[in-house]
Amino acid sequence: MAEPTERTPTEELDALRRTVREFCDRELRPQARDRDRGEVYPAELVPQLAELGILGSGLPEDLGGAGLAYDGYRAVIEEVGAADSSIRSLVSVNVGLVGKSIVAWGTDEQKQRWVPGLCRGELGAFGLTEPAAGSNPSQMVTKAVKDADGWTIDGSKIFITNGSEGAVTMVFARAIVDGEDRGVTCFLVPQDSDGYNGTKIHGKLGLRAGDTAEIAFERVRVGDDAILGEVGGGMKVALSALDNGRFSLASGAVGLAREALEVSLRYAGEREQWGSAIAGKQLVQEMLAAMHVDIQAATGLLDQAEAKLLAGQRATLEISTAKLFATEASVRCADRAVQVHGGYGYIDEYPVQRLLRDARVTTLYEGTTQVQHLIIGRILTGVSAF
Ligand SMILES: Cc1cc2nc3c(=O)[nH]c(=O)nc-3n(C[C@H](O)[C@H](O)[C@H](O)COP(=O)(O)OP(=O)(O)OC[C@H]3O[C@@H](n4cnc5c(N)ncnc54)[C@H](O)[C@@H]3O)c2cc1C
Image (cartoon, rainbow, N blue to C red; front, top):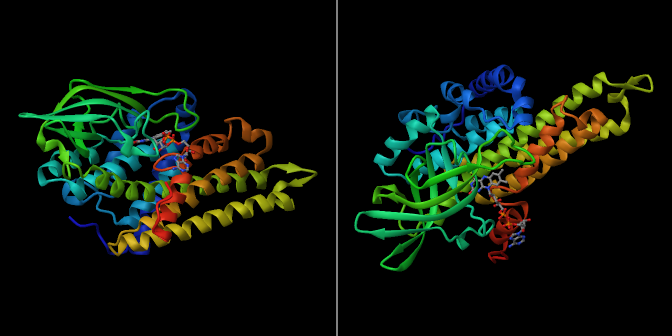
């Protein structure tokens, strides 16, 4: 069940993009503003995302996925990211962080138990961050205590995407065996377990339609078969998951930036001041050109990451580089899009203010921009500056 390494033929990739874009135009874009305004979770869209194969887009066919290679997966995420980042986030976590991790680290039983469900819309969540352990997850205090029949998990997580509307959460906890801390370990915890309490967080700046939850674990029981990877091997699982997650996030950020440019080009062509379209004003063109340059540069960095992933190689440096640049570029592009729209960009008649608010989190989660600098710096120098 290795990742497909063949590049997807260009015509197939184009057709895939077209199909997903048509779906986004029909099903996602029209209600994106209302979902954003009302913080409405897109429950009714989940079956449709599953039906079209989006929820299993980067997962193997024999487990119910669409079997796309990294290039096809990237195209899907970019299109969904252009339409609605709340939904892109839901998909990225389900496929990139959870599905791909279970495929990479799971036993056959774990793969059969969880991956087909993820593809069908029984969503997965990735529970790493804790109230006092964000950029440094190894500071986590959630613990899983071993006894004769299994494990008891106590603790809490915060900001967990799909954490209250999903079926399973990858929970990272310190494994305590015979009173000894054996290190961070990943457990696959059903969200309907007794003692699993996921509560949606409201009042976010962006991703307002998304399920971002805080989770309390009160004596949650799981068996040995819930361990993903090895006891004490949780950080390895987390870091490989984050490589996949950041690739996906960077792809979504490019989609968002592209949308910001497309709507700005349209608006600049229609809006007239001083008797002509603002598209003909040099300083407006400067903003549009800067957006284009950002998008092209982010795309080039993603191409480098994708090439390594398609070659079956680790790509942490290329992925962190692309994540850092693409997410910062998406904030710049969305901000410029608001500027191009003038006062109209400040109200949600146009999508650009949502794009700006949705872009803002991308430089924070899955490792902040500062953390990406430190990852890149550590790889370049061999010295950790965390
Ligand atoms: C909408 C949303 C969805 C999320 N989804 C998930 C999810 O699904 N699963 C999950 O586990 N987490 C998730 N997160 C959590 C996210 O990954 C964390 O918020 C992020 O890692 C930062 O951690 P923190 O918020 O605790 O900030 P902190 O770690 O407290 O950082 C605060 C500031 O200090 C800086 N900083 C920290 N350490 C250093 C250092 N060594 N050197 C320089 N600067 C430093 C940071 O860059 C940042 O600017 C989500 C967050 C949000 C907002």
